[in-house]
Length: 419
Image (tube, rainbow, N blue to C red; front, side, top):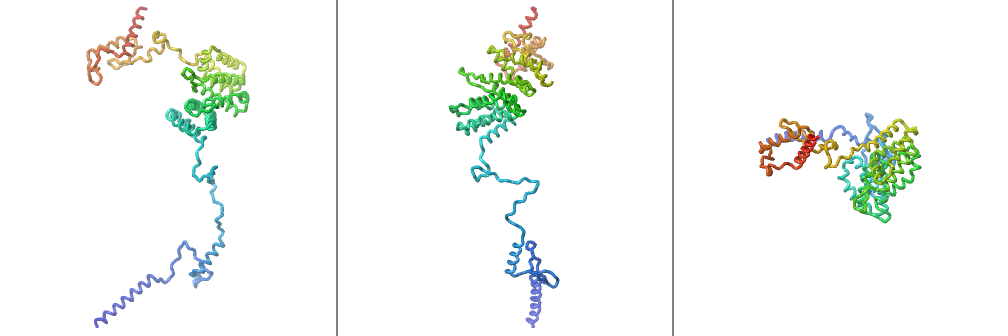
């Protein structure tokens, strides 16, 4: 009895467990198909009108083939690019290399250096050694040297406001480019390139506005080159290239012989840039070339029909030359200098302070009395004037510079009293 009673609950428990498994793993309705797999039917439907899914592997393959055959998609279709984007093209390498970046050329290198110096001219001194070493590693043949000269010349005459830095660059490279073939070193090849442009001056000065603009850039670069290019002489002291001195005179004559506004403005810029140096050099040689140029400017002011602004520029230039190009007259020799004949006499004198903090210099009429007052205070309170609280080694010794200034002032005061 005991076993029979226990068997009934046991069988009912087993039956209930089986019903639970059946409800979990054998649902009444089929599972929904994954969204990534579109349902494929053979056209038949169940009693509710829903398509009957094909479960046969053979039928599934046939339906997939039919879908591919009816598709309008093509693997050979061109790439779609939205209208707001530019189409991308792979770089084409002349050497058919598989590298992602093309190998840098000398032109790219010079362009990078020039762009950096043009944007940061203050870095010239700190960067020039690296630039020179890099270019020396590239320039190993005569053809590459000529290419380098051409690249720098073009950059110096085409980039606005780069003429000065370009001339400095040319000067440094003329002394530090190691390759010097028989046809000429860097400086000689550069002057040959400038000579080539110089020979075309008559055509350029009468050309169209674009040709004139290039010619004017060349003229200003030549002026900067004359001021910055150093040529070593036999004496060892570097000097300027005399060949450029004659070239600048001829260029000025060419510009004044065709006195339209652009040519006159270029001539004024060149004379403001280098007029004082040209004038001094011609005077040292006993030549009056600058007087001849100023005479031509005066004739143009009287006869030529130049614009009002250009006429004003020419007048200002004549005034500038009459004032010695705006330079201060040379100060008297130090032994002969006095406050009356040297305006810079007191420029470098020390500044002192009275007990109440009032500054005074040797130019002060009461300088002698105030200075003596300072000396007296030092005598009465020597510890207060010792540096860092230490004893002074030379208590009675005055600073040489201060002593010299004081003696000079006393001598002048005595001279004034005698007058």
